[in-house]
Length: 211
Image 1 (cartoon, helix red, strand yellow):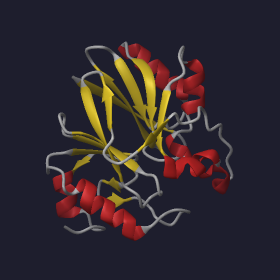
Image 2 (cartoon, rainbow, N blue to C red):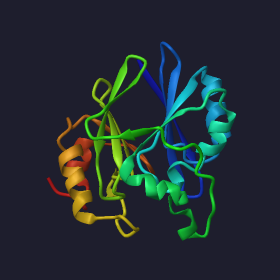
Image 3 (cartoon, rainbow, N blue to C red):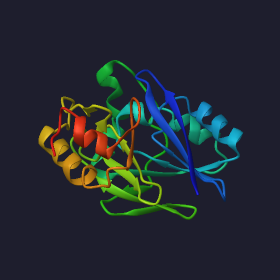
């Protein structure tokens, strides 16, 4: 059975998700946004063992806590990122663009591809490549639990920005229509910022994309 906790971290209130197989306690962090030690303390409090870091994309506010988290773990974590965002990751996720410096943390060890399946205990997650916000943006779909961890692709009543380097409005719109709106309406959308939503709600009410 899948369990997860949401932490809101960092300078732009990024949602960090700690997900775990409740039977084994094996855990992954989707977007270790900031304050890696706080992430680890939350997992330890729940009895979960973090072994993997999964990035939806390589903007600095989505992996700024990875360095401290990895240093605090007993075993180096698996780090998953799409190859088209490697250059962005190497450039501190664009942090210098905003006058900031971060430690990018451990080098990605898994190059994500569309259709790839990641496993956490007995739970499977489908990787869907969803460019637009960044070239290598991905989302993680857990069909069994009707959950989509969707990063900065789509939000409650909004969508990801495309005005930063690598952004592309047409690609973003296509990603939403083809990789999100084709999922069952009851699928929960767990975004990189803000409150959760559902596919059905965004299809009906999101003013930025149409069905």
